[in-house]
Image (cartoon, rainbow, N blue to C red; front, side):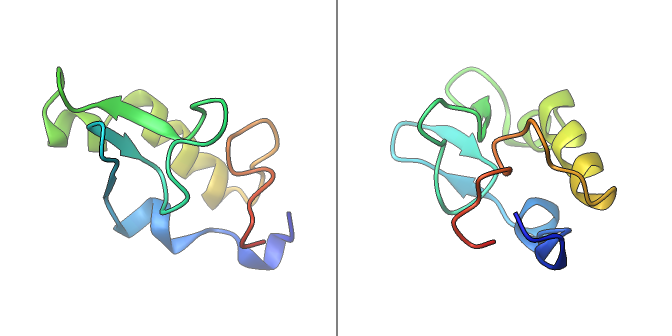
Length: 78
């Protein structure tokens, strides 16, 4: 991934909910391995999902310009 696309504004400002009720980190959905799924909204409130440990960790990685090992590493936009 090109670091000039980091941090990605989508993980900081947008909510993406999939048809099956998952809160995803971006518009590319939950990823092939589900690594962009941040919360299952069928059992978690939106705000709890938005502020989840998984989402906070992903945002920290973006702010550090190092998304290695995250679902964003192979981003189609980067």
